[in-house]
Length: 448
Image (tube, rainbow, N blue to C red; front, side, top):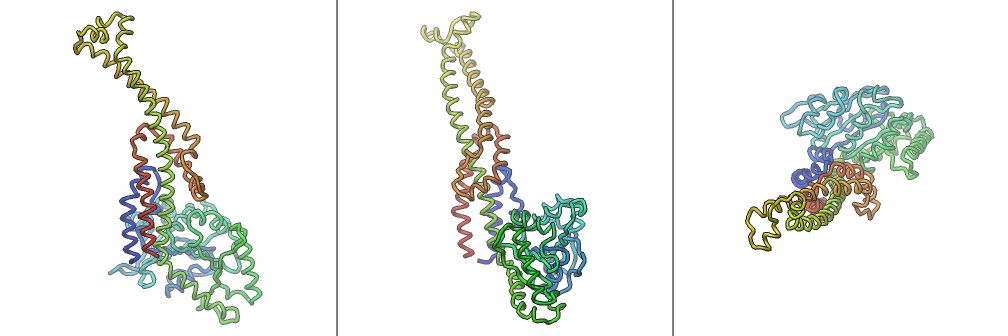
């Protein structure tokens, strides 16, 4: 099945079936909806001298980005193809974040300073007809949000969440020692993107004087990678160079094939798109299911207490209906004849039922007040304190999800009212489970 058609079908399905449920449980699905809107994205990141712009220019066959040893571009630049009948042009960030057809609406939160460092370049190139490349400001060693004027790492994280491929670049002279690079590898990227979406590249290897120099730089990068990731198994690191700038040498000859493999990998990013969308849908719907499961069990416990309260209230109201007026008569000599006495003598009429009916209604109202004010409130507080008892954590996957979603569930419980008893949580849970076991599996089968 055509990937664009499948993506459009997924967008319709998510909007119709899932978006109302995400909204109901106050879960943010904006990232998922954003990914479904647009084309595949390759995000290129690295320190300021790592060769990001050079790689992009080589890939596109045009000098679209400025290059240099020092910082040359301090903007997040989206590069994509022109539309039909469109010429090459630049679109400012303020326009991008207000275009509903693009996935960048949520970036408004980063403020005006960020938007002045955010733009799109449209150019005529067949390579970008079905994907976009995002060039990023170089990572620095000593920088704060105040220095940049916006939260660089938060922006990077949100873009990584949208990206189908992240190219993280290093150069032989600063092999992973940059502070922002450490933060990105250690926390930002693992939280926002899957490891399979990240490829590591050491560029400018032509600047190594000899093979020993290259080996030392590569070894230093591997060591730093192990410290940053906390893992001993280092992922593959592509070695590359700019052929137009490098002089022929014995070092570069064996690396030409690897450089070609890197370019092929980047160009194949559109093929990952639908699979990544399905992975993100799978993850977020499982999070939604866990929240709904907790609220379903909470609602079920509420119904059990409501049933007990209702039985007691019914018995009390029956007793009050037939004998309540007797107690009032003994206290204030009213009414003149009780309902029970009238029934016994066969003299009852409509007037005899007015006071008992009022007492019965008052009893039921009092029972509802006690249930909603004390019984339900007590249940809500107890469930919020022991929220983990509302879900079955029978796998490590669910335990990890619960770590993320527990606070969300506690927030919903803190605001819960008796309307939760009629909120249809059980029906919603069935819809979610049906989507995961049937609909989602159907889409996975289509891409196999």
